[in-house]
Every structure is written in C-alpha cells, then in structure tokens.
Length: 98
Image (cartoon, rainbow, N blue to C red; front, side):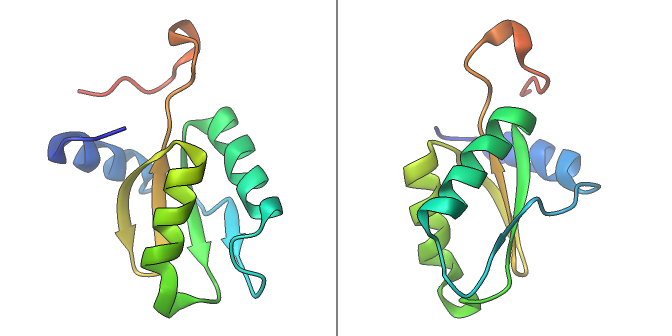
C-alpha cells in the first residue's frame, strides 16, 4: 500500500492523540509482536508502535513489520512509528483517506 504525502500528513494528524499500543522490546520483532500488530490494525486501522530497544535498527525493523503486516507507514517520529491499514470491509472503515 502506497500513501501520498498528503495522506501521510492526514494520518499523522489523526495519530497525534493516540498512545502506542505495541511495544518492541528486548526480543525484537517476534511472532508475538507481529500478531499483536495485526490484531491492533484490525481493531483500530491506525496505530503507533514504540521501540523501547533496537532503537538503532528501527528503520529495518519497521520495514520488516510493514512488509509482514501489509500495512503502510504513515510516519516515524523519534522512536515511535505510525502504521495504517484499512479494514477489508469498506462499510466498516472508520478512516477515509483524502
């Protein structure tokens, strides 16, 4: 999924008030973290992930999460990544991209 710059800006604005729902700790991007990311994206569509460890490798780890979850990265601010994946059913989508 590719987002335009205006869509990424819109999603970053929506994510401003959100708290991180997934934390990447000392085990890195494990299957449990990927399952949690998938569940959170199914529930919320727009989530934040915080890197508590592996801060130097967050770019490659984020690319791995994006590739394996089917989401799009809306932005990275410090050690927090914003991911977006619309729901499969168009009638249940909460976020409409401009």
